[in-house]
Image 1: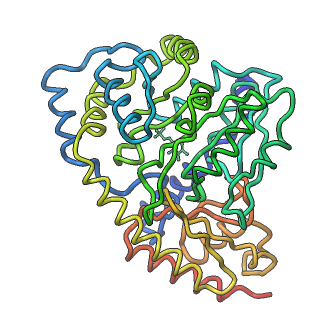
Image 2: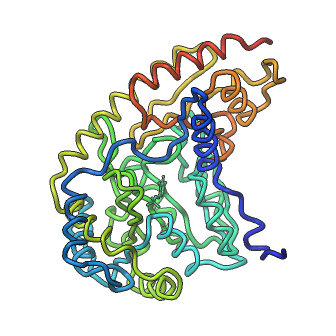
Length: 398
Ligand SMILES: *Cc1c(COP(=O)(O)O)cnc(C)c1O
């Protein structure tokens, strides 16, 4: 079979693959502990599920407007105003089938071969692939661990060429859990505006922040920044609604118009029932979210402490999201029965075989010294996992 070059150039999602391997091993009866999951382990709150049931009973089962129902767009406008202080109108919102779909739509309408898009590393695995699918080139800027993996304005400036069209900001970040402060965002925005770059701000983890950290949307810095920014968000992470597939963008009406046209000829509207449920999520009580975040914070403290206690392992303390991103590079060069560990792929393979631990090698995110461990797992599971890692690491030889 002949396939298009477009798809042959795409790498499959390593996070999804590792999750699938862990599930498969478990199904075969192996006692594997999976830290690969990219989703909350909580159930969708009841009042949201109830809204979906009501939508079904009211026969809300037909096509909706392509870009989302006016009622959901209003709920999104309300959320962005009350939580980020941003004002938008209906023609500045597009609802899609998940924030991944939102970014895909943007890539398809904004870029083509010859364009460059700046992506700070460590990055979410799908960003470079979706930029690649548009024909544009992903330019990777490596955020350094001593700077909490964050891109500096100087790094941004050095990556800009006459071909650069946009820069991506993902705060809080998947996979590192680090997040930009207002003043850091101000400096990045100033640089982006000066070079006429569009800013894409993925804020899917805006609600999952710890120790009172204030999430700031880069779009809220000034009207000028807002006009040059597309905010991306969705229901998946904050409301434990990954399966419902609702994401959205807010930005310049011309971009929304083209992206809506693209969606109208590809996927059409997102699921009508999920849209009704998302209104309940955005407008209803936020208490379930607070409880979930509290529990994530407890687990974060636990996993960071546990990992840091293992000789040869260091672990940045994330301020948001639900991932730890420990650094295992001091163990590279050591050996086990399977050979010498040369990088994060080898290390993940070693842990899967020796300790029955599934985690995602950092190389998938453009950071080979680290690995991602989701703490969307109970404290007992985390404890067991950390103990196994400690034991396996202890068995390594020079
Ligand atoms: C999970 C995730 C998304 C998208 O999730 P959807 O389920 O498609 O809404 C987008 N960006 C980042 C950084 C993520 O981690």
